[in-house]
Picture 1 (cartoon, rainbow, N blue to C red):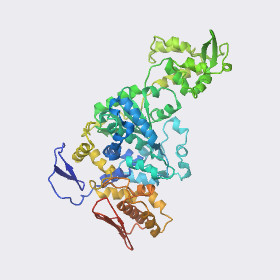
Picture 2 (cartoon, helix red, strand yellow):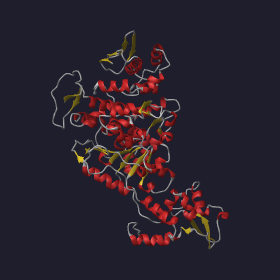
Picture 3 (tube, rainbow, N blue to C red):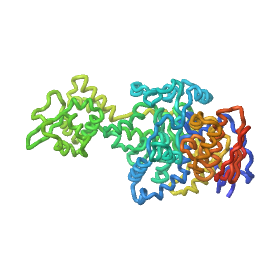
Picture 4 (cartoon, rainbow, N blue to C red):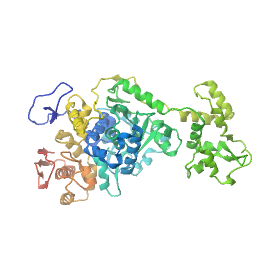
Length: 597
């Protein structure tokens, strides 16, 4: 057993794969961190969407932090996941999906983590990215995506229109512990999280609970969304709380159409994998080229399908305005009768039968007789005839002759029916806008953890590669373990990015703030030597004495920035001291620290 030291922490490791294990020294004062690194490492504590966009390593760092979480490993023992080992990977994923649906809400409340301004964030990130690039890639700074989003008015869509034009939300991403703690907030019965929180939770749970290898899990983000692609069977896409299979992608339902929005309308800005990442802005990529090529190929196959009678009917389900061009025939007592397609699709909503599969006849039998006609409806295309057209025939939409034959079946002599064919081809084949492969690929140390490893083994391994793997190092900051991380990034994040606690206390006197915090249960949402940030303490109305002390310091500094505040933490006691104030609370974190902010 050896020790390595880096960035002011002491790591216990059994070996160092990087080949640079250091000598056994006592813990010393943390070395200075460059302003660039300090900003990145402090961002691993707040994890806003904007921070992840600027520092793409953070997306996978949060995933690893969740993989390290004992809260997530406890899921393995939950009765819901009993007999999981006997299931196929896809059945495991479905089991996980239902667990997440039952236990987490999708949260997009702009007030959850407070507000900031465009000017402040642009100035903060100016060393890494110019304002024009940020505006082209982030919804909070002017991005509106493709034509779909231009029709929405982004600020009104996200509820930002109630604020001045430069006010934007932090939209911080939550760890699994912070997601679980939503149940302590008014109005929540379960855990909750926004899309990045859910995507990183899914990725971590896929590995820990479903035992999907990291190599098969790809995280990717667009300016307005975050999802995962799981390379198993024909592929599985996570979308907020739900998952989408290839068959679901083409089923034409409203739920699936919503799941498609990001890939259909937005540029993918970031792809993260256990081998590294690729970003649409940065010229260098660390993801293994062969892994990225596999992701591109598999994702393209996932969003591409063949044209047949079923996918035609699915297309019409999604594009309801074109149902008016079709009718469906049905034999009744030996005689044909006809019904408008939109009538049949409407009955789907209250039936388990579908227009698009072999249950169509049963669906038609459920419909009232007065909806049918004895003669074909004029100027409507008979949907049934395409079953004959496609039978025993594979239509290649890239083949000119196949397309000509199809247009003949559609009787494509007017603009409207030709438009249907064009849109149908778009429905069947999507070209995701991914970061181009023409990047400078820089070899990086992959994260090599397997589904056979225990949590302790993974913990030791990640500690052992911190010196040569920045993502592993950042993971311990996202994990919030102050026995293994430098205090400076944690305090920078706490003092500079705690708008909820500062705003929540603005109408309280200093003594009222102290009394308010003192009234919180002396319990942390994090185990062991891990610490909550001030806004987590304030939002969830609980915290260990040390966490509440840091929250108090953040509020005091916001009111009187020129005044120093000291925090002294020992084995069971923490003291906060300013010019004319001394507060003591009990702490069970076991962290010895003398801090001045």
